[in-house]
Structure formats: structure tokens, C-alpha cells
Image (cartoon, rainbow, N blue to C red; front, side):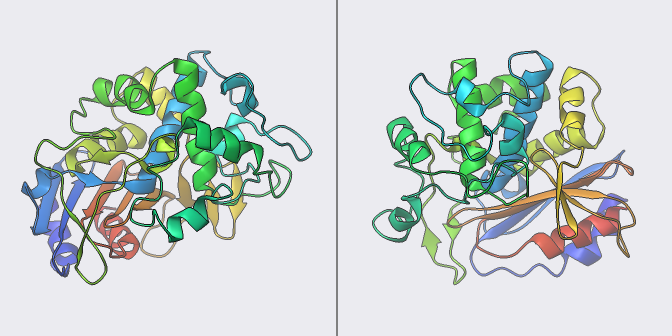
Length: 326
């Protein structure tokens, strides 16, 4: 049974004041598990942070498959009229943003100072369209797009904003309509709560507030449950079939390398290694009081997601869980 295979890995989880929820799928059986203090056990809702970027990339592939956008479209084409996007060598494309090859810095100019001072407890909440327009104009690429991969929250958020503008709706509405509703993910969105939203905790176990996003929602705004994220990961690992599965598969091709890692559209790819002799796709995430990690191995059709309501590293535990499944 799946639970028996994962028990040796999960039994070592130690918490201060928060809780952890885990979802796993081995191609035939699905399991959820939880530990610690949570409002509704494994059904609790967590901030998933940068795992949101994999939704943004899937939205890009889905909209490209429908002909609404193209991967090689300059991002400026899908921003409001009058927005000026600085260039270095050539225009930044949607594909550049999704694969972290835009040349843009990790954060737009002005955000770091704001995040470290008056808005450090909720650093993205005040970034509305007007703020973002000004930030885009004053934040040139550090290098020509396409040359090298360098992780950028700003780039992923700008991609999400451009896609939502092209669709004529909010990022939340776009993600719900194109991904969450088709997959039956009723507990995923930028503002879901329903009394099941877990409270976040600092590394010392102190309660911290939730994060909120506006214009950069595509970088990290989504909240979700272990079960909902498993539905999304099963899509990427090869189930179910259909148009959305085609979009998911289109995000998997490596686009750039950074050391041992490869960058796909939204996903990071680990090469085969001892104990995990297959490519593993993964992404982690973090907000002020939450940590998350999601991964899958398409060759074996297995997937796992771990969500924590306290600031604790989950990458190692996530890889150990994937190894147990494989």
C-alpha cells in the first residue's frame, strides 16, 4: 500500500507550531496525510508561493495552443497600451519569461527596499498595475534575453499579468477558468479560505500574517490544498488525457541549463541520480509563513506535494518522498 511505502519517510516530520499536509500518487493509488496543527487536517488550505509559477506556465502553453498568444510574442504586445518595456539586444518574449531567460532581475527596481521596510510583512500587496507599469519602465534586462537562465519572480509575475490582460480578466479568474475548473480544483485560487486556511508561522514558530498579491499574482499568489495540487500534478505526470494535458506536456521540454538543473516552462528539472534514476520535475515555494514543494516523475507516473504552514525546508523531504514512490 502507498501509505506503508511512505510511512518511513513521513514519520520523521518534526514541527514547532504549524502543520504539514502531503499528497502522493503512484499511478494507481492516491493518498493524503497530515501532521501538526491545521484547521482541517489534510484538507487545509495553504499559500503555495512560487508553485504558482507552474500554473502560469501551463496557462501560457494552453493559451498558445489555442492561438491566443504565441511563445515568441514580445511581452509588450500583451501589456496595456503605452507600457514601455526596455530592451537589451532584442525584445523579451513570453517564452523568455516562463523559462527564466528574460535577463530581468529577481525583483523589479524598488521592491526590495519596500519589502525590507514598511511592507516587509506583505511585500507584494501594494504592487498594482500603476506600480508595475512604472517598475517595468525603470527595470531594464541585465543581459540579452535568451542567453542564460536566472530565476526571476518579477519575470513570472509579469508573464501572469500579460496573460490575464490578454484574456481580459484577473489572474485568479484566468487560472480558475482554464485550469482549476476543468480539473475539479475547487479549493485553489488567490483568495480561497472558507475557514480552512492555515495560519503561517516563522522559523521560530511565531504566527505571521498571510501574503496578498495584485499585479504580480502569477509569481506566487495561489492558495491550494494537497488534494487539489495532486490533481494538477497528475495532469503533468500523464493523466488525464485531453487538451489541457497537451498544454501541460508542452511545458516539459528543457529550455536552458543552470549547473545540474534544467529550466523548462515553469518547471525545474533534476537529472537522473542515485536513488532517483529518472528525470524529476519540481518546484518549491515560500511566503512569509509557508513553504511548499511539488514534484513528479513522468516516466513512472508518480507525483508528490508537500505543504507546510511554517517556514521549514521541504525540498529534501520532497525528494525522499519521490524516491519512495519510484
